[in-house]
Length: 161
Image (cartoon, rainbow, N blue to C red; front, side, top):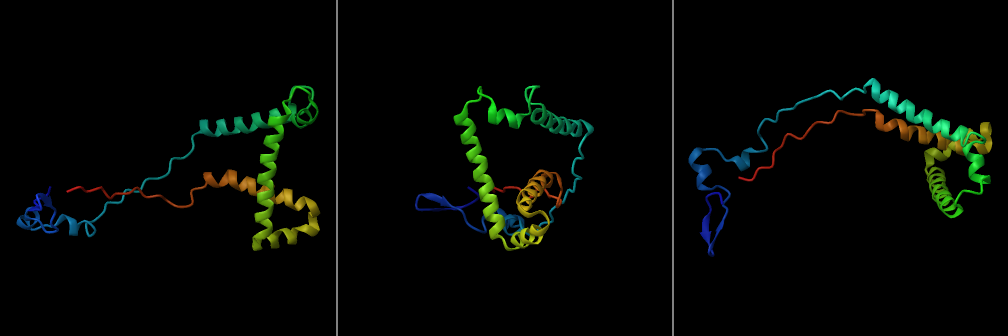
């Protein structure tokens, strides 16, 4: 243990132990006043391969929704095709509907969103809610890709002495 004194059959660590007093430095008290080196690194920019992959994923999703099974689009298939298992489809639709209801509830209860919805209602009417939802989802897709601040790595080390 770091130079403790025997107390009750064991060793108890002292704040100013003999090991520190002899050398003149107290590591425990000096830990917060030591100069910390900051290493700033620039965030990694996206490579063209990552951009192409993202574009391909979006194009693939649009292709699936638009072409479906080469005869009709995916929305028509979901409603009219007899090969679809209805129970999992309905459970998924209930989950999506629940998310939409939660979003509408929070957007109507938030004062600033409520004012925005009321302000846009004379222009688009009932389409205001889906339009705002679409804008919200676009922001959810874009925000993780925006670097808001620079993150600094922690330079503190866990000291055990």
